[in-house]
Every structure is written in C-alpha cells, then in structure tokens.
Length: 181
Image 1 (cartoon, rainbow, N blue to C red):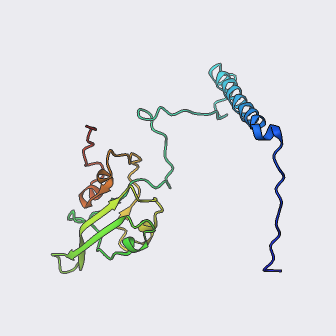
Image 2 (cartoon, one colour):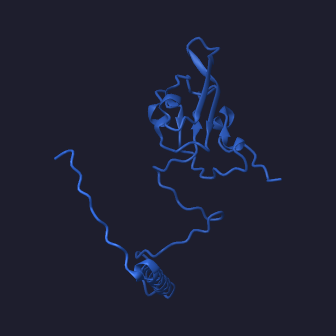
Image 3 (tube, rainbow, N blue to C red):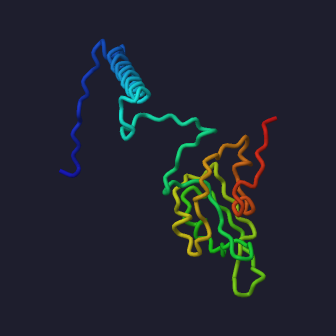
C-alpha cells in the first residue's frame, strides 16, 4: 500500500467559475462588510456609545506614531560591549556557522588582553540577506549579539548600505542616512 498512489480527478470549472465573477462578488461582499462594520464601530466609539474596553480597529500614523512592539519582536542586531568599550564577541564563529542565510562575516584577530583569546577584527552583517531567525542570538556563548534595538527601519538605497560593520553594530543608529542622488 505504501507504493500506490490514488489519482484524484478534479472537476472542470463551470462557465461562471471560469469568468471569476462569483469569486469577485464574494470578495467585494467581504470588503464592503468590513468597511461598514468598522465604520459603525468607530462612529459608536466617537459618540461614546461603545465602552473604552471594547477594542476597535486602530490605525497608527507610522512615522509620527510608531506601532507598539512586542517584547519578543526581533529587530536590528547589535553587538554588546565590555566595560572597556570593546566588543564582547570572542570571534568563536558560531553565529557565522549557524546562520541559515550566511549573512554574517567574521575575521578574527588576537586580542591585546592576554585574558581574552580573540576578538572580531571584522564583523559584517548583511541585512539584505538576513532572515531574522534569531539563531545567531541563541547560539552565542558570550551573549555578544542581540536583536533588541527596536529599530525596524532596514530600508536602504543600495545593497552596500544594508551591510552593517562592527562599528554600526556596536553603536546602532550611528550611521547617517544618505539621500538618493
């Protein structure tokens, strides 16, 4: 029984189904219903006929009024610092190895402090390739990388601008945004 397959014959579409008019009408009906239900609830809320505890749809005016974020949301990456200001990263390459998108590039160097074996001479992270899975944060033994900056603005005018270096990762938001030419 494991090697046998049952072929299921699909029924042919009728003339009206091929016109897509019924599907279009159903979609239009749903959209119109949502419009009038939302209009009714917002009007009732404005006239104080609806208690404040009853939630209605909310529109956030994005640049001026950003949407509140959950505490668990993964936003832009950052590297943690030691007390002396150097990166906490010991260039163990675990984050680079575990990354499914292969967007982390690390070059290790010897640290001047004899108590610390290595440090990242180069730590680049390509946000254009990153899938925000959080594996790099989970695998880090030194808690050196986090995704808790609260920054969601990852747009850029070129692919080069999407690559964050060690300085940008240590000081999130320090990069100046360039205007398009």
